[in-house]
Figure (cartoon, rainbow, N blue to C red):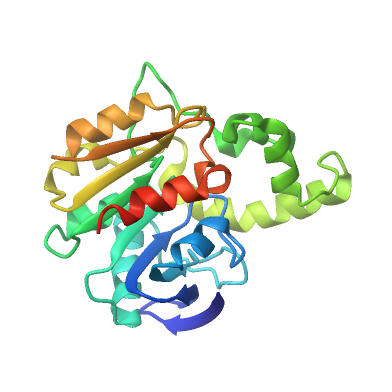
Length: 258
């Protein structure tokens, strides 16, 4: 995988790309994505993968012009145009799944295959989604992973999660990343997507970890109800970070779209 820079209407965009085959646009979640991401590596076996960083993530520039859900959705369509992609598979995880669904709803005739991996975007009063903006690092593994110990090791790359230096680095990175993500996720991840799901015409697969404690599997049924013909792949022994815990199973579900 390599990282390239493309120009869009508002901001230069950093894009992780690699692989060979039909194009696939991957939209990352609130935690971001790197070139070493196991799912990207797996998808690159059969697709040319393009994973743009949302402005403010990684080493990408920030962009004040992207203020709300519509701005961000159109921004990603600008990315598709700048990359010259024709009918890519669109896949998104969590926040990225929310954006991918919005892209398919706003341009229903331009998306034929859609993979939503534990997407945010809906709100059920009986099953509220935890406020990630109010959490410290040590609280996150139990929320995001089926195996919290393995999740903590993955999140910290072997560093001590209680080390003040780690906490400082974490908070500085999150100030940029979650500042951007908060425009569509804070205070709750609901920007009216439920009223637009009916517009989606793409062949859609929903992928969910059975142990997801952030966006629990009950939300899968809500998405299925809203998207005509959507199928569901439930993955055992996986949490919200199913993309890290079970990349082979996630990739297989995406590749089954054709």
